[in-house]
Length: 340
Image (cartoon, rainbow, N blue to C red):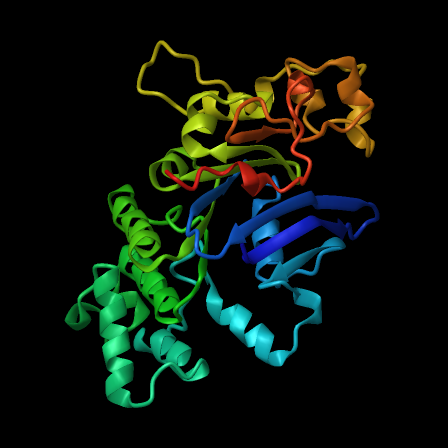
């Protein structure tokens, strides 16, 4: 089956201004297949590499090594026409519903620019019809939205307008980077349901970048958990959230605040470190999570774990599961449950 978007051992290294390097994404292999629209959460704490991975997938960063391909073509080898197609068919929705607009233009401008740039309509009437249909799809009314300046709309309206702008481009994939983190809790469900509708009604795959596992569980079928640039666990969101295997995923889920005041809220920083082993965290070999892992083995400090498959729809980068099958291809999306 044709892969719309894929990375192969993609790595992104940034140089520090004062010297040294930061490995933001490390050896990630992942793909989205054509004809199998899915919703995938790319989750992890701040600095895990999830946003850098999304920028690699959209061609806004070049990989230091490995490759990113769209419809089989390496992004670095694309001509101008292929790059324009990539930009139209992979649409971003960013975190900030305020900074996405020019305050001197009415909000109609973001819709009109998309239609004009990608030549999506042959007449003004056809363009208006596209805009109205997109607004209706995300629960916005034309008379309450168009003709207004950004400051006249709520944050929720502005963010849903961004979803409508993405839809109007007829994308194959929407890259939603923390799309509800800056809106009120009462509006999150509306925006998230709009993304679900795009997936179910229009067959658009959603890549949902988030640190919020509760919303990931709510709208996604599959999930990739990242830590320090590495995918540590991947699979069905039901399996990964309900029965996490990797020690990092377990700590991440246990850190979610619960209404039961008798349950301790565990901070990831509370994972005790053996001071004699912290040295390995500065080296390139070994498991990245070893200094914070409560189950670290001796081999965790000297060798990099592979992708093991403790059950059918899950891959885990952890030596605790070294006696289970290995995911030979390294493509973590192969364990996704597309039937969900």
